[in-house]
Amino acid sequence: MDLYSGGSDEEFDRETNLDREWQRRRDQFHTIWKEASAQEGFNIGFKESFHSGYNWGLVRGVTSALVCLLNELKEMLIEIQEKRNKFQNLHEYMHSLSTTDALKLFHDDILTEKAAEQSEHAEAGSNVMGLQNQSSDRSCLENHFGELESIILETPAIQVPLGVQK
Image 1 (cartoon, helix red, strand yellow):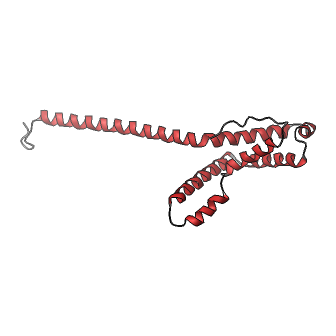
Image 2 (cartoon, one colour; image 1 turned 120 degrees about the vertical axis):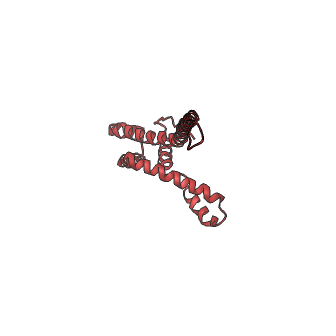
């Protein structure tokens, strides 16, 4: 028996074992919680980014394919020079952006969208934010997809499935 603590060595060992077991289970629970939170964050991020990433890749791919064609083929597919120029300009713009630039655009789009959602719920300053929302109904990345979609719809010889929608 320990004279200073008033308990036996056996009781002390049992308390120490319980403390260690509690710490181990707490650490295990914390690890499981972190993994579940990380997975949930990944799932949300994937869902938010898939549509934009798909459309971004579609614009880059279609414009790249058309630019690689011989001029005679381009003229057969896209009869109007102005439309060919639009394709060329869209291609040049898309390829002037690095992956980092595209990710920054996507990030900015998310922040803009969240700010717009918050402004819809805010009472103060709703007139100013409402005007900003009207001027930018679509995100920067969606604008490029919309531009491609517009050109393709005006060019019946080019058939591109634009199927993935939000």
